[in-house]
Length: 208
Figure 1 (cartoon, rainbow, N blue to C red):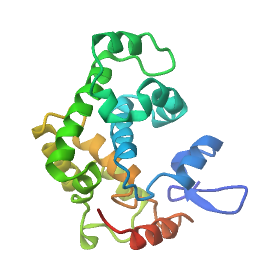
Figure 2: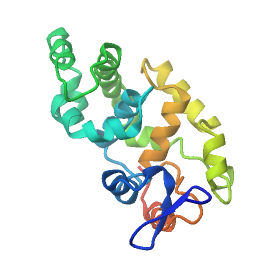
Figure 3: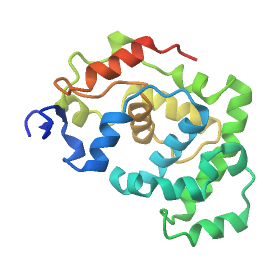
Figure 4: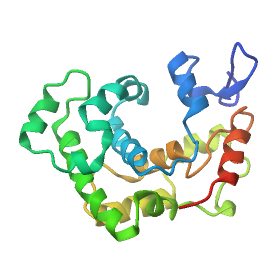
């Protein structure tokens, strides 16, 4: 591993954080940073980033299918209708992270997502409005820069706007991890074989 990169058995160099683990590498290659515009998937991503707080993302990734089953596929219209019985059901589900405040936050955020949908015309339209201008991004994007900047002014602004609307577990660090995951920024570092692929997808994307 050098400069934050790992070379795989296929000869491709990748961001080193996947650690060579098959499931983590697949997430890096096929999903992380790819631009997302589906409201349900965006809600899932921001909720799972909230669950990740204090834990490793790998823990959440390996429980993701359990989370999807437990939270009705993160359909926020359905999650918004959950009551105390659902909270107790989720607290008894060993397949997810059984943290009461994070579970209650997901239900709260589902209700806030419905309000945001009405306000902005959709979650994707709201989130993509926080995309940084190209000249606000580092060039090149390096491992050192990523490690030194777990938040940005853009993630701080997104966090502030969500909190103002009643969302929880959406601090600036969580907001930035969400921005990276959903492709609002491309933080595949220079030298990663997937950086250019993500840039091509972002260039072709029709913003909501």
